[in-house]
Amino acid sequence: MPNTVFVIEAPGKIRSLRKILSELRINAQVVATGGALYDMPKDQLGLNPNDLTPERWTPTSQRTISHLTKKFKDADQIYVMTDADREGELIAAQVNSVLVSSGSKASIQRVVTSALNADGISQALQRPRAINRQTCVAVMARRGIDRAIGFLCSNRNVAGQIAGRISSKIVQSVSRQPLPTCKVAGTHPDQPGWRIWGKGSSGKEASLAAINEAFRRLDPALMDHTREVFTTKPAPAMMTGADALILVANQLNVSLSEAEKLIQTAYERGAISYPRTDSREISPPTQVMLESAMRKLGKRVRVSRLPSSAPREAAGAHEAIYPCDPLHFNANSLEGLSQLDAAIGLLTRRAFASLSPDAKVKSIEVEQSAISSFLAKQGLPDIKVKIWRDIPDTAGWLVVEKEFIKPVKLVRIPLDTAVMERMVEQGIGRPSTIVGHIDKALARGWIQENGTLSNKGQAVLTYLQQNYPGLLGPEDLDHFFDGVPFERVSAAVYEGIHRLNLDYQALRVLAREASAELSRDQAQDESGLPLYEPTADMEMDVAGP
Image (cartoon, rainbow, N blue to C red; front, side):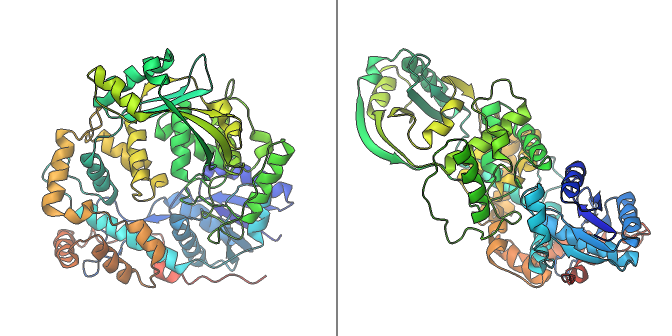
Protein backbone atom coordinates (compact mmCIF):
# COMPACT_ATOMS: atom_id res chain seq x y z
CA MET A 1 0.00 0.00 0.00
CA PRO A 2 1.10 3.64 -0.48
CA ASN A 3 1.60 5.92 2.53
CA THR A 4 -1.37 4.61 4.50
CA VAL A 5 -2.91 5.62 7.83
CA PHE A 6 -5.46 3.63 9.84
CA VAL A 7 -7.55 5.66 12.29
CA ILE A 8 -9.16 3.86 15.23
CA GLU A 9 -10.75 5.03 18.49
CA ALA A 10 -9.08 3.24 21.40
CA PRO A 11 -5.33 3.77 21.91
CA GLY A 12 -5.29 0.33 23.53
CA LYS A 13 -5.95 -1.26 20.13
CA ILE A 14 -2.96 0.35 18.37
CA ARG A 15 -0.47 -2.41 19.17
CA SER A 16 -2.92 -5.19 18.24
CA LEU A 17 -3.82 -3.57 14.91
CA ARG A 18 -0.16 -2.97 14.02
CA LYS A 19 0.53 -6.66 14.59
CA ILE A 20 -2.44 -7.68 12.44
CA LEU A 21 -1.45 -5.35 9.61
CA SER A 22 2.05 -6.80 9.72
CA GLU A 23 0.58 -10.30 9.39
CA LEU A 24 -1.39 -9.08 6.36
CA ARG A 25 1.78 -7.48 4.95
CA ILE A 26 0.23 -4.03 5.05
CA ASN A 27 2.69 -1.24 5.75
CA ALA A 28 0.67 1.43 7.52
CA GLN A 29 0.67 3.81 10.44
CA VAL A 30 -1.99 3.42 13.13
CA VAL A 31 -3.32 6.39 15.09
CA ALA A 32 -6.16 6.70 17.61
CA THR A 33 -8.66 9.46 18.24
CA GLY A 34 -9.08 8.53 21.90
CA GLY A 35 -12.83 8.93 21.47
CA ALA A 36 -14.67 11.88 19.98
CA LEU A 37 -12.56 14.63 18.43
CA TYR A 38 -15.28 17.21 18.95
CA ASP A 39 -17.97 17.30 21.59
CA MET A 40 -20.62 19.58 22.97
CA PRO A 41 -19.36 21.98 25.69
CA LYS A 42 -19.72 20.58 29.19
CA ASP A 43 -20.59 23.84 30.96
CA GLN A 44 -22.92 25.44 28.40
CA LEU A 45 -26.14 24.47 26.68
CA GLY A 46 -24.57 24.20 23.23
CA LEU A 47 -27.95 23.99 21.48
CA ASN A 48 -29.63 26.19 18.92
CA PRO A 49 -32.55 27.56 20.96
CA ASN A 50 -34.77 27.67 17.88
CA ASP A 51 -34.73 23.94 17.12
CA LEU A 52 -32.70 22.37 19.98
CA THR A 53 -30.07 20.95 17.63
CA PRO A 54 -26.41 20.86 18.69
CA GLU A 55 -24.70 24.00 17.38
CA ARG A 56 -21.44 24.16 19.30
CA TRP A 57 -18.87 21.42 18.99
CA THR A 58 -15.57 22.11 20.72
CA PRO A 59 -12.31 20.16 20.31
CA THR A 60 -11.79 17.53 22.97
CA SER A 61 -8.02 17.40 22.47
CA GLN A 62 -6.07 19.97 20.48
CA ARG A 63 -3.03 17.72 20.69
CA THR A 64 -4.84 14.76 19.10
CA ILE A 65 -6.31 16.86 16.29
CA SER A 66 -2.93 18.43 15.57
CA HIS A 67 -1.33 14.97 15.55
CA LEU A 68 -3.91 13.66 13.09
CA THR A 69 -3.50 16.73 10.89
CA LYS A 70 0.24 16.11 10.69
CA LYS A 71 -0.23 12.44 9.80
CA PHE A 72 -2.86 13.22 7.16
CA LYS A 73 -0.75 15.78 5.28
CA ASP A 74 1.75 13.13 4.19
CA ALA A 75 -0.77 10.33 3.65
CA ASP A 76 -2.01 8.91 0.36
CA GLN A 77 -4.67 6.58 1.78
CA ILE A 78 -6.65 6.81 5.02
CA TYR A 79 -8.86 4.06 6.46
CA VAL A 80 -11.26 5.23 9.17
CA MET A 81 -11.90 2.17 11.34
CA THR A 82 -13.65 3.72 14.31
CA ASP A 83 -16.22 1.59 16.11
CA ALA A 84 -19.26 0.49 14.13
CA ASP A 85 -21.87 1.91 16.51
CA ARG A 86 -23.54 5.31 16.18
CA GLU A 87 -20.90 7.15 18.14
CA GLY A 88 -18.15 5.58 16.04
CA GLU A 89 -19.91 6.70 12.87
CA LEU A 90 -19.99 10.31 14.06
CA ILE A 91 -16.33 10.12 15.06
CA ALA A 92 -15.59 8.93 11.51
CA ALA A 93 -17.28 12.09 10.24
CA GLN A 94 -15.13 14.14 12.60
CA VAL A 95 -12.00 12.45 11.26
CA ASN A 96 -13.10 13.42 7.78
CA SER A 97 -13.46 17.01 8.98
CA VAL A 98 -9.86 17.05 10.20
CA LEU A 99 -8.71 15.55 6.89
CA VAL A 100 -10.47 18.23 4.86
CA SER A 101 -9.10 21.00 7.08
CA SER A 102 -5.56 19.61 6.78
CA GLY A 103 -5.55 20.20 3.04
CA SER A 104 -4.49 16.60 2.44
CA LYS A 105 -5.20 15.05 -0.93
CA ALA A 106 -5.39 11.55 0.56
CA SER A 107 -8.31 9.32 -0.34
CA ILE A 108 -10.37 8.25 2.65
CA GLN A 109 -12.44 5.11 3.17
CA ARG A 110 -14.74 4.04 6.00
CA VAL A 111 -14.32 0.42 7.08
CA VAL A 112 -15.85 -1.48 9.99
CA THR A 113 -15.18 -4.85 11.56
CA SER A 114 -16.70 -6.81 14.40
CA ALA A 115 -13.45 -8.64 15.15
CA LEU A 116 -9.98 -7.25 15.70
CA ASN A 117 -8.11 -10.07 13.99
CA ALA A 118 -6.59 -10.79 10.59
CA ASP A 119 -9.77 -12.25 9.09
CA GLY A 120 -11.91 -9.40 10.36
CA ILE A 121 -9.55 -6.70 9.10
CA SER A 122 -9.05 -8.43 5.74
CA GLN A 123 -12.81 -8.68 5.20
CA ALA A 124 -13.33 -5.07 6.27
CA LEU A 125 -10.83 -3.78 3.73
CA GLN A 126 -12.78 -5.53 0.99
CA ARG A 127 -15.99 -3.67 1.95
CA PRO A 128 -15.29 0.07 2.23
CA ARG A 129 -18.36 2.29 2.38
CA ALA A 130 -19.49 5.86 2.86
CA ILE A 131 -20.26 7.38 6.22
CA ASN A 132 -23.87 6.65 7.05
CA ARG A 133 -25.60 10.01 7.14
CA GLN A 134 -28.75 8.78 8.88
CA THR A 135 -26.69 7.18 11.64
CA CYS A 136 -24.88 10.47 12.24
CA VAL A 137 -28.18 12.33 12.26
CA ALA A 138 -29.52 9.92 14.88
CA VAL A 139 -26.57 10.28 17.22
CA MET A 140 -26.52 14.08 16.92
CA ALA A 141 -30.25 14.22 17.58
CA ARG A 142 -29.91 11.95 20.59
CA ARG A 143 -27.06 14.08 21.93
CA GLY A 144 -29.16 17.21 21.45
CA ILE A 145 -32.17 15.70 23.21
CA ASP A 146 -30.05 14.38 26.07
CA ARG A 147 -28.46 17.81 26.49
CA ALA A 148 -31.86 19.51 26.47
CA ILE A 149 -33.15 17.10 29.12
CA GLY A 150 -30.10 17.26 31.37
CA PHE A 151 -29.48 21.00 31.04
CA LEU A 152 -33.03 22.33 30.88
CA CYS A 153 -35.13 19.84 32.83
CA SER A 154 -32.90 19.46 35.90
CA ASN A 155 -33.73 21.52 38.98
CA ARG A 156 -30.34 23.10 39.53
CA ASN A 157 -31.54 24.90 42.66
CA VAL A 158 -31.97 21.63 44.52
CA ALA A 159 -29.06 19.25 45.02
CA GLY A 160 -29.63 15.91 43.36
CA GLN A 161 -32.64 16.98 41.30
CA ILE A 162 -30.97 15.88 38.08
CA ALA A 163 -33.07 14.84 35.12
CA GLY A 164 -31.69 12.47 32.53
CA ARG A 165 -33.18 10.23 29.88
CA ILE A 166 -31.57 7.05 31.24
CA SER A 167 -31.30 8.00 34.92
CA SER A 168 -35.03 8.77 34.95
CA LYS A 169 -35.75 5.26 33.69
CA ILE A 170 -33.51 3.81 36.40
CA VAL A 171 -35.39 5.68 39.13
CA GLN A 172 -38.74 4.66 37.69
CA SER A 173 -37.83 0.98 37.39
CA VAL A 174 -36.68 0.81 41.02
CA SER A 175 -39.79 2.64 42.25
CA ARG A 176 -42.14 0.09 40.70
CA GLN A 177 -40.66 -2.88 42.51
CA PRO A 178 -37.66 -3.32 44.84
CA LEU A 179 -34.58 -4.72 43.16
CA PRO A 180 -33.64 -8.35 43.86
CA THR A 181 -30.65 -8.05 46.17
CA CYS A 182 -30.01 -11.69 47.06
CA LYS A 183 -30.07 -15.03 45.30
CA VAL A 184 -29.47 -18.69 45.90
CA ALA A 185 -27.99 -20.67 43.02
CA GLY A 186 -25.78 -23.65 42.30
CA THR A 187 -25.53 -27.41 42.60
CA HIS A 188 -25.97 -29.61 45.66
CA PRO A 189 -22.58 -30.21 47.36
CA ASP A 190 -23.10 -33.98 47.62
CA GLN A 191 -25.62 -34.60 44.83
CA PRO A 192 -24.35 -32.31 42.04
CA GLY A 193 -27.12 -33.40 39.71
CA TRP A 194 -29.55 -31.37 41.80
CA ARG A 195 -29.68 -27.62 41.19
CA ILE A 196 -31.41 -24.63 42.73
CA TRP A 197 -32.05 -21.09 41.56
CA GLY A 198 -34.02 -18.20 42.99
CA LYS A 199 -33.65 -14.53 43.74
CA GLY A 200 -35.59 -11.92 45.65
CA SER A 201 -35.62 -8.59 47.44
CA SER A 202 -34.06 -8.06 50.86
CA GLY A 203 -37.42 -8.86 52.46
CA LYS A 204 -37.21 -12.38 51.02
CA GLU A 205 -33.63 -13.11 52.12
CA ALA A 206 -34.73 -15.17 55.13
CA SER A 207 -36.93 -17.27 52.85
CA LEU A 208 -34.05 -17.91 50.47
CA ALA A 209 -31.78 -18.81 53.39
CA ALA A 210 -34.32 -21.33 54.70
CA ILE A 211 -34.78 -22.92 51.28
CA ASN A 212 -31.01 -23.02 50.83
CA GLU A 213 -30.51 -24.93 54.09
CA ALA A 214 -33.37 -27.32 53.33
CA PHE A 215 -31.92 -27.99 49.89
CA ARG A 216 -28.47 -28.70 51.33
CA ARG A 217 -29.83 -31.37 53.66
CA LEU A 218 -32.26 -32.69 51.03
CA ASP A 219 -35.14 -32.08 53.40
CA PRO A 220 -38.00 -34.53 52.66
CA ALA A 221 -40.46 -31.67 53.17
CA LEU A 222 -39.19 -30.44 49.81
CA MET A 223 -37.58 -33.35 48.05
CA ASP A 224 -40.48 -35.78 48.55
CA HIS A 225 -42.75 -33.54 46.49
CA THR A 226 -41.52 -33.74 42.94
CA ARG A 227 -42.90 -34.24 39.50
CA GLU A 228 -41.25 -35.63 36.39
CA VAL A 229 -41.56 -34.03 32.98
CA PHE A 230 -39.94 -34.95 29.71
CA THR A 231 -38.97 -31.72 28.07
CA THR A 232 -36.69 -30.07 25.55
CA LYS A 233 -34.65 -27.16 26.89
CA PRO A 234 -33.63 -24.78 24.09
CA ALA A 235 -30.02 -23.70 23.91
CA PRO A 236 -29.44 -20.17 25.24
CA ALA A 237 -29.35 -17.32 22.75
CA MET A 238 -26.11 -15.67 21.72
CA MET A 239 -25.22 -12.79 24.02
CA THR A 240 -25.67 -9.06 23.75
CA GLY A 241 -23.21 -6.73 25.41
CA ALA A 242 -25.49 -6.46 28.44
CA ASP A 243 -25.77 -10.26 28.69
CA ALA A 244 -21.99 -10.53 28.66
CA LEU A 245 -21.58 -7.88 31.36
CA ILE A 246 -24.00 -9.65 33.67
CA LEU A 247 -22.46 -13.09 33.03
CA VAL A 248 -18.89 -11.94 33.71
CA ALA A 249 -19.87 -9.87 36.75
CA ASN A 250 -21.82 -12.76 38.30
CA GLN A 251 -19.39 -15.57 37.52
CA LEU A 252 -16.23 -13.68 38.52
CA ASN A 253 -17.84 -11.79 41.40
CA VAL A 254 -16.74 -8.37 40.15
CA SER A 255 -18.55 -5.06 39.68
CA LEU A 256 -20.11 -4.14 36.36
CA SER A 257 -17.39 -1.55 35.84
CA GLU A 258 -14.71 -4.20 36.31
CA ALA A 259 -16.58 -6.59 34.01
CA GLU A 260 -16.78 -3.83 31.41
CA LYS A 261 -13.01 -3.25 31.62
CA LEU A 262 -12.29 -6.97 31.25
CA ILE A 263 -14.57 -7.29 28.22
CA GLN A 264 -13.17 -4.15 26.58
CA THR A 265 -9.61 -5.40 27.12
CA ALA A 266 -10.56 -8.75 25.60
CA TYR A 267 -11.90 -6.93 22.54
CA GLU A 268 -8.83 -4.71 22.19
CA ARG A 269 -6.61 -7.79 22.28
CA GLY A 270 -8.62 -9.43 19.53
CA ALA A 271 -10.06 -12.18 21.72
CA ILE A 272 -13.75 -11.32 21.31
CA SER A 273 -15.88 -9.39 18.86
CA TYR A 274 -17.23 -5.87 19.30
CA PRO A 275 -18.79 -5.85 22.79
CA ARG A 276 -21.23 -2.93 22.79
CA THR A 277 -23.80 -4.78 20.75
CA ASP A 278 -27.53 -5.23 21.23
CA SER A 279 -27.81 -8.13 18.78
CA ARG A 280 -28.24 -11.81 19.62
CA GLU A 281 -27.60 -12.95 16.06
CA ILE A 282 -24.46 -13.83 14.14
CA SER A 283 -23.63 -13.91 10.46
CA PRO A 284 -23.09 -17.09 8.40
CA PRO A 285 -19.28 -16.65 8.28
CA THR A 286 -19.15 -16.28 12.06
CA GLN A 287 -21.37 -19.31 12.59
CA VAL A 288 -19.23 -21.42 10.27
CA MET A 289 -16.08 -20.37 12.14
CA LEU A 290 -17.53 -21.20 15.55
CA GLU A 291 -19.05 -24.51 14.46
CA SER A 292 -15.75 -25.56 12.88
CA ALA A 293 -13.96 -24.88 16.16
CA MET A 294 -16.58 -26.85 18.08
CA ARG A 295 -16.17 -29.88 15.82
CA LYS A 296 -12.38 -29.77 16.20
CA LEU A 297 -12.89 -29.80 19.96
CA GLY A 298 -15.24 -32.78 19.71
CA LYS A 299 -18.37 -30.83 20.58
CA ARG A 300 -21.75 -31.47 19.01
CA VAL A 301 -23.31 -28.79 16.83
CA ARG A 302 -27.03 -28.41 16.38
CA VAL A 303 -28.62 -28.33 12.96
CA SER A 304 -30.04 -24.84 12.69
CA ARG A 305 -31.14 -22.24 10.23
CA LEU A 306 -30.15 -18.60 10.57
CA PRO A 307 -33.09 -16.21 11.02
CA SER A 308 -33.81 -13.92 8.09
CA SER A 309 -32.83 -10.93 10.22
CA ALA A 310 -29.30 -12.24 10.82
CA PRO A 311 -26.53 -10.22 9.15
CA ARG A 312 -25.42 -11.87 5.93
CA GLU A 313 -21.77 -10.99 6.47
CA ALA A 314 -19.63 -10.21 9.49
CA ALA A 315 -20.09 -6.51 10.08
CA GLY A 316 -19.53 -4.07 12.87
CA ALA A 317 -21.88 -3.73 15.78
CA HIS A 318 -24.60 -5.91 14.29
CA GLU A 319 -23.51 -9.30 15.62
CA ALA A 320 -23.77 -10.88 19.03
CA ILE A 321 -20.58 -11.25 21.06
CA TYR A 322 -18.45 -14.21 20.00
CA PRO A 323 -14.86 -15.43 20.55
CA CYS A 324 -12.50 -14.59 17.70
CA ASP A 325 -10.14 -17.46 18.52
CA PRO A 326 -12.34 -20.11 20.16
CA LEU A 327 -9.79 -22.91 19.87
CA HIS A 328 -7.28 -20.92 21.89
CA PHE A 329 -9.65 -19.68 24.58
CA ASN A 330 -11.76 -22.80 25.14
CA ALA A 331 -11.50 -23.69 28.84
CA ASN A 332 -13.07 -26.55 30.77
CA SER A 333 -12.51 -24.77 34.08
CA LEU A 334 -11.86 -21.26 35.36
CA GLU A 335 -9.44 -22.53 37.99
CA GLY A 336 -5.98 -20.97 37.73
CA LEU A 337 -7.00 -18.48 35.05
CA SER A 338 -6.50 -14.74 35.27
CA GLN A 339 -9.69 -12.70 35.42
CA LEU A 340 -9.19 -11.67 31.79
CA ASP A 341 -8.72 -15.23 30.54
CA ALA A 342 -11.62 -16.40 32.71
CA ALA A 343 -13.88 -13.74 31.18
CA ILE A 344 -12.87 -14.79 27.67
CA GLY A 345 -13.37 -18.44 28.59
CA LEU A 346 -16.88 -17.72 29.87
CA LEU A 347 -17.86 -15.89 26.70
CA THR A 348 -16.39 -18.67 24.56
CA ARG A 349 -18.30 -21.40 26.38
CA ARG A 350 -21.55 -19.46 26.18
CA ALA A 351 -21.14 -19.06 22.42
CA PHE A 352 -20.54 -22.81 22.16
CA ALA A 353 -23.64 -23.49 24.26
CA SER A 354 -25.73 -21.31 21.95
CA LEU A 355 -24.72 -23.40 18.94
CA SER A 356 -25.12 -26.76 20.68
CA PRO A 357 -28.17 -29.02 20.28
CA ASP A 358 -31.20 -28.46 22.46
CA ALA A 359 -31.24 -30.60 25.61
CA LYS A 360 -33.84 -33.39 25.66
CA VAL A 361 -34.10 -34.47 29.28
CA LYS A 362 -36.25 -35.94 32.00
CA SER A 363 -36.54 -33.10 34.46
CA ILE A 364 -37.38 -33.87 38.09
CA GLU A 365 -38.74 -30.69 39.66
CA VAL A 366 -39.70 -29.87 43.23
CA GLU A 367 -43.23 -28.53 43.15
CA GLN A 368 -43.58 -24.84 43.95
CA SER A 369 -46.53 -25.66 46.21
CA ALA A 370 -44.18 -27.71 48.42
CA ILE A 371 -41.77 -24.77 48.64
CA SER A 372 -44.61 -22.39 49.52
CA SER A 373 -45.94 -24.78 52.17
CA PHE A 374 -42.47 -25.22 53.68
CA LEU A 375 -42.04 -21.45 54.02
CA ALA A 376 -45.55 -20.92 55.37
CA LYS A 377 -44.96 -23.41 58.20
CA GLN A 378 -41.93 -21.35 59.22
CA GLY A 379 -43.82 -18.08 59.00
CA LEU A 380 -41.68 -16.84 56.12
CA PRO A 381 -42.77 -14.95 53.00
CA ASP A 382 -43.39 -17.03 49.91
CA ILE A 383 -40.91 -16.80 47.05
CA LYS A 384 -40.57 -18.56 43.74
CA VAL A 385 -37.57 -20.90 43.71
CA LYS A 386 -36.70 -23.59 41.20
CA ILE A 387 -35.20 -26.88 42.43
CA TRP A 388 -34.63 -29.49 39.77
CA ARG A 389 -32.52 -32.26 38.31
CA ASP A 390 -32.02 -32.95 34.61
CA ILE A 391 -31.37 -36.51 33.46
CA PRO A 392 -28.97 -36.68 31.77
CA ASP A 393 -27.33 -33.42 32.82
CA THR A 394 -24.96 -33.74 29.88
CA ALA A 395 -27.67 -33.60 27.22
CA GLY A 396 -27.23 -31.13 24.39
CA TRP A 397 -25.94 -27.73 25.43
CA LEU A 398 -26.04 -28.60 29.15
CA VAL A 399 -22.69 -30.38 28.90
CA VAL A 400 -21.00 -27.20 27.64
CA GLU A 401 -21.88 -25.13 30.70
CA LYS A 402 -21.87 -27.89 33.32
CA GLU A 403 -18.28 -27.23 34.38
CA PHE A 404 -19.05 -23.61 35.26
CA ILE A 405 -21.93 -24.30 37.64
CA LYS A 406 -20.75 -23.65 41.19
CA PRO A 407 -21.82 -25.34 44.45
CA VAL A 408 -24.94 -23.77 45.95
CA LYS A 409 -24.47 -20.49 47.77
CA LEU A 410 -26.66 -17.69 49.08
CA VAL A 411 -25.14 -14.42 47.92
CA ARG A 412 -25.92 -10.74 47.79
CA ILE A 413 -26.54 -9.30 44.33
CA PRO A 414 -24.47 -6.13 43.84
CA LEU A 415 -26.69 -3.12 43.26
CA ASP A 416 -25.10 -2.27 39.91
CA THR A 417 -25.79 -5.78 38.62
CA ALA A 418 -29.33 -5.71 40.01
CA VAL A 419 -30.04 -2.44 38.19
CA MET A 420 -28.57 -3.76 34.94
CA GLU A 421 -30.66 -6.94 35.14
CA ARG A 422 -33.78 -4.83 35.70
CA MET A 423 -32.95 -2.66 32.67
CA VAL A 424 -32.48 -5.76 30.51
CA GLU A 425 -35.73 -7.32 31.74
CA GLN A 426 -37.68 -4.17 30.92
CA GLY A 427 -35.95 -3.54 27.59
CA ILE A 428 -34.81 -0.06 28.57
CA GLY A 429 -32.28 1.73 26.35
CA ARG A 430 -29.07 0.07 25.24
CA PRO A 431 -28.01 -1.65 28.47
CA SER A 432 -24.54 -2.48 27.16
CA THR A 433 -23.69 1.25 27.13
CA ILE A 434 -25.25 2.46 30.40
CA VAL A 435 -22.87 1.20 33.07
CA GLY A 436 -21.81 4.82 33.64
CA HIS A 437 -25.41 5.91 34.17
CA ILE A 438 -25.90 3.16 36.75
CA ASP A 439 -22.71 4.12 38.57
CA LYS A 440 -23.82 7.76 38.73
CA ALA A 441 -27.25 6.85 40.09
CA LEU A 442 -25.61 4.80 42.84
CA ALA A 443 -22.97 7.47 43.56
CA ARG A 444 -25.73 10.06 43.99
CA GLY A 445 -27.28 7.87 46.65
CA TRP A 446 -30.60 7.34 44.88
CA ILE A 447 -30.82 3.61 45.68
CA GLN A 448 -30.49 2.00 49.09
CA GLU A 449 -28.70 -1.25 49.84
CA ASN A 450 -32.07 -2.98 50.19
CA GLY A 451 -32.85 -2.23 46.54
CA THR A 452 -35.39 0.54 47.12
CA LEU A 453 -35.27 4.26 46.44
CA SER A 454 -33.62 6.38 49.12
CA ASN A 455 -35.06 9.71 50.22
CA LYS A 456 -32.90 11.35 47.55
CA GLY A 457 -34.14 8.94 44.92
CA GLN A 458 -37.74 9.45 45.97
CA ALA A 459 -37.27 13.23 45.76
CA VAL A 460 -35.96 12.86 42.21
CA LEU A 461 -38.92 10.65 41.29
CA THR A 462 -41.40 13.15 42.76
CA TYR A 463 -39.75 16.01 40.89
CA LEU A 464 -39.97 14.12 37.59
CA GLN A 465 -43.57 13.03 38.21
CA GLN A 466 -44.61 16.62 38.84
CA ASN A 467 -42.64 18.28 36.06
CA TYR A 468 -41.55 15.78 33.38
CA PRO A 469 -43.66 12.61 33.62
CA GLY A 470 -42.83 11.80 29.99
CA LEU A 471 -39.30 10.86 31.06
CA LEU A 472 -40.78 8.11 33.23
CA GLY A 473 -42.78 6.55 30.40
CA PRO A 474 -41.94 3.39 28.45
CA GLU A 475 -40.86 5.16 25.25
CA ASP A 476 -37.23 4.46 24.34
CA LEU A 477 -35.28 6.90 22.19
CA ASP A 478 -32.57 4.47 21.07
CA HIS A 479 -35.07 1.95 19.76
CA PHE A 480 -37.05 4.75 18.12
CA PHE A 481 -34.04 5.97 16.13
CA ASP A 482 -33.21 2.38 15.18
CA GLY A 483 -36.52 2.12 13.35
CA VAL A 484 -37.06 5.61 11.92
CA PRO A 485 -34.40 7.17 9.65
CA PHE A 486 -34.05 10.96 9.42
CA GLU A 487 -32.19 13.14 6.95
CA ARG A 488 -32.17 16.29 9.10
CA VAL A 489 -31.11 16.63 12.72
CA SER A 490 -33.82 19.20 13.44
CA ALA A 491 -36.56 16.81 12.31
CA ALA A 492 -35.08 13.97 14.36
CA VAL A 493 -34.87 16.17 17.47
CA TYR A 494 -38.46 17.33 17.04
CA GLU A 495 -39.85 13.82 16.62
CA GLY A 496 -37.64 12.39 19.38
CA ILE A 497 -38.79 14.97 21.91
CA HIS A 498 -42.42 14.27 21.07
CA ARG A 499 -41.70 10.54 21.32
CA LEU A 500 -40.66 11.12 24.93
CA ASN A 501 -43.87 13.06 25.57
CA LEU A 502 -41.97 16.26 26.35
CA ASP A 503 -43.16 19.78 25.50
CA TYR A 504 -41.06 20.90 22.52
CA GLN A 505 -42.17 24.54 22.71
CA ALA A 506 -41.55 24.74 26.45
CA LEU A 507 -38.03 23.38 25.98
CA ARG A 508 -37.37 26.01 23.31
CA VAL A 509 -38.39 28.74 25.75
CA LEU A 510 -36.04 27.33 28.39
CA ALA A 511 -33.26 27.09 25.80
CA ARG A 512 -33.66 30.75 24.84
CA GLU A 513 -33.46 31.76 28.49
CA ALA A 514 -30.34 29.64 29.01
CA SER A 515 -28.70 30.98 25.84
CA ALA A 516 -29.39 34.59 26.82
CA GLU A 517 -27.27 34.10 29.92
CA LEU A 518 -24.15 33.52 27.79
CA SER A 519 -22.00 36.52 26.97
CA ARG A 520 -20.77 37.13 23.45
CA ASP A 521 -17.27 36.07 24.45
CA GLN A 522 -18.50 32.76 25.83
CA ALA A 523 -20.13 31.95 22.53
CA GLN A 524 -16.84 32.12 20.62
CA ASP A 525 -14.45 29.25 19.96
CA GLU A 526 -10.88 30.46 20.45
CA SER A 527 -9.12 27.12 20.11
CA GLY A 528 -7.59 28.05 16.78
CA LEU A 529 -8.65 24.66 15.43
CA PRO A 530 -11.08 24.10 12.56
CA LEU A 531 -14.72 24.35 13.56
CA TYR A 532 -16.70 21.18 13.25
CA GLU A 533 -19.66 21.21 10.89
CA PRO A 534 -21.06 17.67 11.07
CA THR A 535 -23.70 18.15 8.38
CA ALA A 536 -21.02 18.78 5.76
CA ASP A 537 -18.84 15.90 6.96
CA MET A 538 -21.61 13.39 6.42
CA GLU A 539 -21.36 13.82 2.66
CA MET A 540 -18.15 11.75 2.43
CA ASP A 541 -18.29 9.14 -0.33
CA VAL A 542 -16.33 5.94 -0.72
CA ALA A 543 -13.03 6.58 -2.40
CA GLY A 544 -12.37 4.78 -5.64
CA PRO A 545 -10.14 1.72 -5.85
